Length: 298
Image (cartoon, rainbow, N blue to C red; front, top):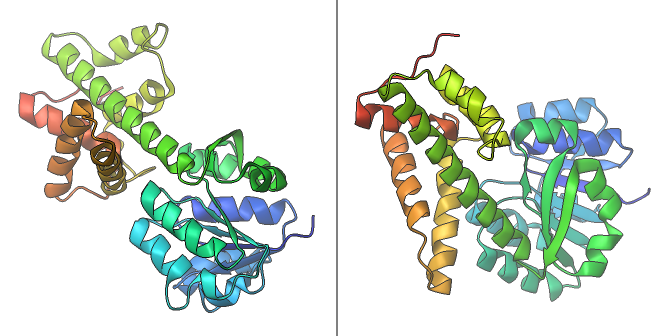
């Protein structure tokens, strides 16, 4: 294992992923705007660089994990971006959740410099990032993916090469669509149970043993009942992802009414100043609209 890995984007997801790579023996370079973000990685043995360009010049694989399409464009294609430092034969792996169209544009521009790109968004939250059990959806060339499979296996457990450039981002859009609508359905179910005079906690326990049982009902259902909205994934970021879903749907000329409905819930949550809460907090919008408060006592 001699490939030197660079990591850009050391937030809630990026930091534990980068640490797992470092602990697995990959020589690691890191970049972030704030020293406080870099410090845990430097203390663990990583080397920091002053720009994405400088980092890319020293790495065989450069991973980006930032918030939005515009952030990827800046760190990959910007004035001091990865594209200006990356060597021919190196690979950029973007683990952000962004527009498939932006992904394809970045991949094309990198290819003109002889640099490969894989889009590899993830699902599984901070717990999955910490434990190395993320689900990873990969788009790009199959041979490049196979070359880097050992690296992906450090990060995740369910690793799927979905198709060509942008396919990973399409899969992630589908993931976010499903998660958002399932959370809305669970919130509506709990509100209905409470309004009917039935204990939502017991309804959840009953549902966990049937077809409605899911990881979302287990984790986010508990969050809703306890009003525990410390973010694993912020509502503002989930809404950003649903904007990507809606843009992709418009490009394909398909309608997604369920997505539109849940986007409205998240809009209301964010407009009330609660966009930094976990997206499971959308249940509070349902509570307010129905005049129902879920029983939060154990």
